[in-house]
Length: 283
Image (cartoon, rainbow, N blue to C red; front, top):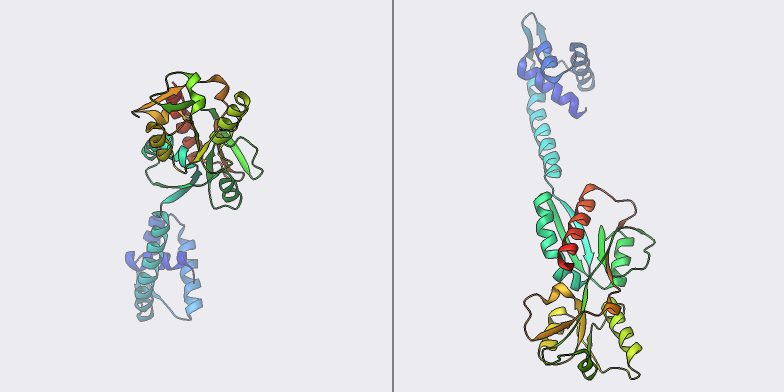
């Protein structure tokens, strides 16, 4: 007994006509008749009495109609529950990117795909790659430029970085007297770039302060606690902070990777939105 047979049986019972049922369901009459006969053979009973005006349900037919209505209703509810179940796009990124780049991108994305749920996880660079590889994330947005074996890169766009200092620091000559404030994760690209730049210009290692959040770094810099390196857009409306654009520090970029077996329109749309937002932020 199949769903189609029950639906055909119900239609015949409702219309009391083989020909009308065939017309309503887009089948030829012989097809409708064949399905009804198959049901009758399977149940070893007669479901309809045929007469000149059409068909009438037998007692067993009435019994089956009662059950068929419940079965079809349950099947329809089950199908609808899956059709209405929203798709979730699982995004992995760093805390910094999640804070300064993604908010506006998410707003724009939801305008295009209102039925797609977005789930954003903030992780370090190494964990992002691992979770993309094992299928826990659909895509990742990262500063890490090295190749990911189990992913396909669909975005590679530069980001503008600035060296941020307390407001009391008026020139680059004053920079060297401050501690360097960096993320505690050694794979952080801003940390690598800043320390590499420092080591090129100073023989002594800097005094380092490790902080885990962008907000903590900004507040510490604003209070005179040190210098750091962050994307330029992070500084919007920040008080008591000076910034210096240094060409040799412009060596990071935003990369978006998706799993190698995935490249639907939802990912391309997100990539386009991020790319557009980066152009706005970098101007």
